[in-house]
Length: 136
Image (cartoon, rainbow, N blue to C red):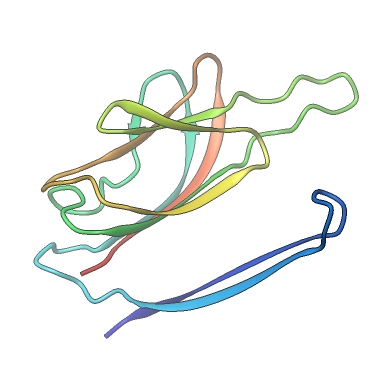
């Protein structure tokens, strides 16, 4: 049985009127189900045309999955504009925008067989890294 270990560390002493110190660790089983492939990983050049990030998972996501997406585009610096935000869509409905340098990690369940997630930009060319791991 394969597994993945997830760590989350969040520390701040000046965002709230008190110190925030969150450290969570979880090991999750990633045993494959009936799909031939239970994971998808890669880097994409993103445009206004939506790209499916779980194409390597036969038939789409039909169980819970762990999803990581990072906007690897350039942040605004020295008068140069930032690359565009990456728009993440669940079955073509926008669920979040990720600015350059930002990332997200979340559990996903499309609610049925053959669910899919896509990434796109509102305008221009963006860049993203992603990972989708289907769980059973």
